Length: 410
Image (tube, rainbow, N blue to C red; front, side):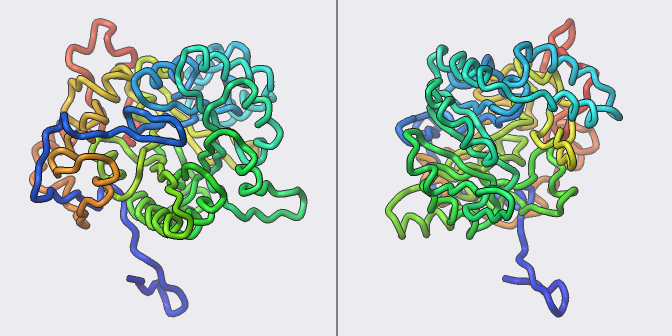
């Protein structure tokens, strides 16, 4: 239903994760009987999870760790790890920057050119660990580098930007024809982001194996404020899932819908799947891991744009391992640990056996879901009122490496 903004303009109502609730069904199921696995092309993953292509989240080392836990980590091939041989030195420098100088100093750090030989080296490092290797390039650079990265052993290519369309128009350069480009590639391709039915449908028609859904919902992204763009994630995912159904009727091909950003808790992950996503891509929850390369900081990959930065460097609390955050065990009750266990339990509680079934879960618009009856938790900042500021049980004595940091809240 459209609402009237004024006499000359109408708009749809859109919803974020906090606006909706999953309705339990007439059936429940044993969690051990729930299958949360996910498949992209020939690859099957135990966890329906991708780690965002962000320098504070994915390094060759964390890509290996996440892969061995059952997920898929995406390395940014235009980031710190392909600009500097000694990436650790630059990551330490970013972590030490004062807040008021962070953006301009990061612009200077990222001015260093991307080096093709480092692209190859980083892919080979991940490949050697035995996990599926995925990496991202922007539409502007993918034509230049794709042959080399495929030769290095890349298994999955992600073509990613703030917004990627199937019909880019330019008077100054030859636009990338995604349909022709993808058709010639021997590996599965994920493209995005997008946030609407029509954009998602046209991206699916390019032959992509997966489509990223999300424009500006991430904890470190400022696109929504800088450009005024975006669609709340619950609506965006549901719309692109609708495009997936249309595309399947047209072609018989099933394209994976990947919810990209805006998720903080296991409940958010479950809602993303219930809205129609096949998998989720997350960044800030993983930036909290002790192993994360960001050293307690997280930033978007448009943070350092030379003329119009659209991201911020935010602080996180490093309060768990990658394993604890993804698969547990959880030592806190705020939903920020054991994200995949929470998804499994949500599906079991509603009686669904796998991701495809859970896509059909009943939803309600429920803006009071997060606050109803939660006054004591909110006033005491515990449980659902902690907003991700919880520290692990027994923290201290050096267990929490960033005890003085504050949460990004997303």
